[in-house]
Image (cartoon, rainbow, N blue to C red):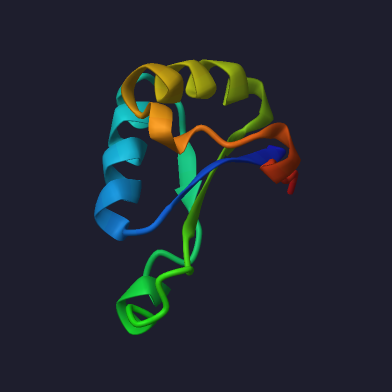
Length: 81
């Protein structure tokens, strides 16, 4: 499974909302460092990346564009792992 950054979230609430919507549509995703935000709350620039499988990227982007348009990131911000 090759994962790709779909988007970044500033809170665990926001990240889990997106994760829940994606998983309802059959797209598995990974939240990275979600527990660190509880410790690093004073650092507002810390964000939680959401990763999806490379094969699900287009479908996940379409869902994101429709339901969370403010979370769309440019191709220069997409990282492959």
